[in-house]
Image: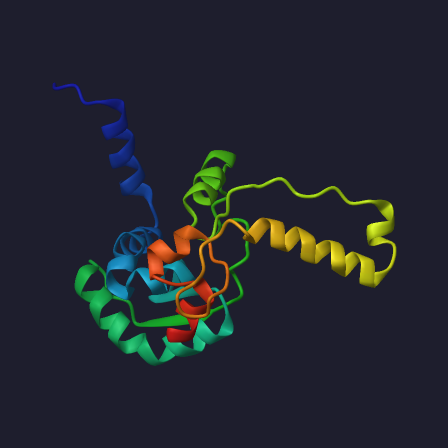
Length: 184
């Protein structure tokens, strides 16, 4: 009798007693981003398989509607990779915000994302506000313009629109995020 690692034994038991739909969903999750692409995978999440129908949560109704037109192509590509084929795919926004469907970012991940974000601007000292500076709307607006000018005076200008732009945006897209979005 040969000894096996406990994790191997538990894994084989888990696979043996797992419902077929769950096994099929695990296979779909493994191949999802390869089949649909990274951009679509970021806006969608396979949720369940019920009666050979894959249910996919989408970030908004626009994604759901557009993906309905791609349903057959996605289904054919997925079925080529699965052991048990799917009969259909349904896209919906209903489970996108459910707690089980999202993985919460911990503080370290959130900090790392912000540190590497191209729109991040280094913190500069902000002028102190007097209570009179925010007493009426005109004074509050004047204080706001002073704060914005102090934040943006050290930023390089976008070569396209000549607005102050975070350096990360210029390094990533060669101009500001607003000009980059206009080109898409």
